[in-house]
Length: 126
Image 1 (spheres, rainbow, N blue to C red):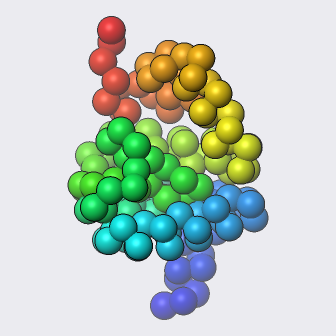
Image 2 (tube, rainbow, N blue to C red):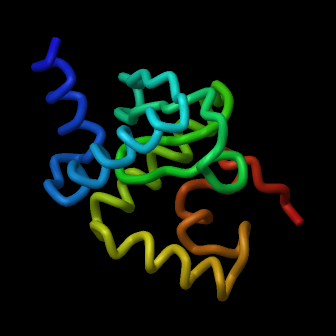
């Protein structure tokens, strides 16, 4: 079972060591908030669902883990998997880059959200 978990961690972090560390920390954090953690084989991301709190908006991706209070629709999982790709590309600096971009261009104008697919992320056209 541990080997399977390790393979999933590598997959969720897109093979990036920095993202794997961040993902592990996110999973511990999610568990502290009462998450039910599963792995989505199609999109290669951990789903940390039914959390009592501890995430922004409708959910937050940290490394290769999506943290949320409910079970997400497939389109949202696809959107969040792109954010996992972004974490793997930028490492821990993704959090800083995302926050700066969010400060400059909120929500549907944020380039990272646009890249992940606005409709999949639940953003309206307005």
